[in-house]
Amino acid sequence: MAYTDDTLLDIYDRTSGYCHICGRKLAFTNYAKPGKRGAWEVEHSVARANGGTERLNNLYPACIPCNREKRDGSTRAARSRNGRTRAPLSREKRATAKTRNALAGGAAGAVIGGRFFGPAGALIGGLIGAAVGKSAKVE
Image: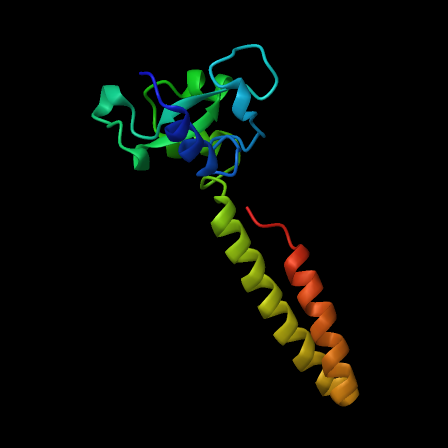
C-alpha cells in the first residue's frame, strides 16, 4: 500500500520514531529502504491476513527485521520476544508523562524536605524532586 507523506509522519510520530516492537530508533527518511540505518516499514498491529485494517489506529512504525519476523503473528508476542509490553509513547504523551513525573517528584521532595529541614528544606527538596522526576526515563 502506498502512504502519503502526511500519513507516514502520523504513523512515525505515534511512537516518537521508535520501532513499536523492539524500541529501536527509526529514521523517517529511511522508510522502506532495507539496509539503511533506521529503515522501517508500516506494520499492521492486527495483520491484514487476520482481518486487520488500514485505519491509523492499526498502523505502527516497525524496523524492517521486526516487521518481517512478526509476519501475521500477534503484536503482543512480538513485543514480548523483545522484552516489551507496549509501544513507545508519542511525543505528546511523553511530554505529559515527564510533566506528571516532575510534579509528583516535586511534591514528594517538598514533603520529605519540609519534614526534616523545615520550609527551606521543602523548597530545596521540591526543586530536587522535580528535577529527578523530569529526568526519569519515560517509555
